[in-house]
Amino acid sequence: MTADQNTQRSWAPQTQMVRGATERSQFSETNEAIFMTSGYVYENAEEAEGAFKGENERFMYSRFRNPTVAMFEKRLALIEGAEDCRATASGMAAVYAALACHLSAGDRLVVSRALFGSCHYICAELLPRFGVKVDFVDGTDITQWEAALSTPANAVFFETPSNPGLEMIDVAKVSELAHKAGAVVVVDNVFATPILQKPLHNGADIVVYSATKHIDGQGRCLGGAILGTTEFIVEKLTPFFRHTGPSLSPFNAWILLKSLETLKLRMEHHCNNALKVAHALEREKNISKILYPFLPSHPQHKLATSQMSAGGSIITFELTGGKFCAFQFLNQLKLVDISNNLGDAKSLACHPATTTHHRLTPEERGHLGITEALVRISIGLEDTDDLIADITQALA
Ligand SMILES: *Cc1c(COP(=O)(O)O)cnc(C)c1O
Image (cartoon, rainbow, N blue to C red):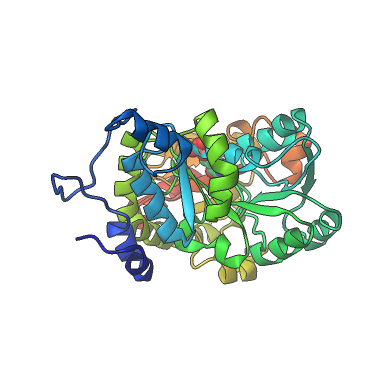
């Protein structure tokens, strides 16, 4: 017996993460099955005709839907509190599909300047090639949103907290302004995850994820997701999705499905660890500036604590002594690895100016506070004493 949709919606998040949307095959397996199949067979030609006419809902081709992928989509939708979800092969496929599926030449998109490097490419270079007008604002400054959204717009896109500057954007306020301007609000919720922040509850229309980050959280596979209303998913996204093919592999969906079982436990541990390390870093004299949303010194600490339930896994800081010292620090780390990935069980550190954000011009990096002295650390699930000891010795 499986619980019905309404019962599953009433479950606490931890129960949804372990059991939500589980479908069992005729073999009654305990664990979710991997349906590695590209196609599906029909009893007769009429059934195939009906499926293509949309008369009977069934699996037709794994570019459209797949049973393992559907379990992941439905489970994530339950956790997020979204009506529907489509999973993608990567986070970037999710970001691109969420924007491209409904924007047309002549439309206007307003975005926060503090974007992940590839999101910046989509907004600054790719969409303008197809005639979408894109305006950038300082996402932390509500007066800039007010000015940009005083004229009609079709979509608003931002990430909060941002990568790597950990800028916070007020989802409720920006969504209200966006809706008055006629825009759909798309939020990249990668840093917060559905555990720490629920943009849809604060007025956003669509949430996108890189599941590669905390959702997998164990460095194994790429993945992404788009969540929103059934109307948006069915009418805007589904045709784009079916015909352009950003679909997630059933094997990766199975990995991510298993990851959801432990997402809350891992996020709580990531956040506790990160807060401890952030406090320890505050006492270090070789650090000139430290950013962590749940430190009172964060410029938007009040917004962070009202919008998020914990500070996340990422800490950003500046070393005295510029790029030379930042590189020295990274090279001296013995436990923490140098990697541009984040949200992993293993703690990872990187130098955004020369890696994730190297494509930006020095002026653009300047706007975002991505200096040559800036280091980003994604705090993993190791013991904090070991992490603090490693970071402290590398700073010395
Ligand atoms: C990593 C990341 C993405 C892209 O996700 P991929 O799975 O690597 O394609 C998008 N947005 C943010 C904020 C990210 O950190």
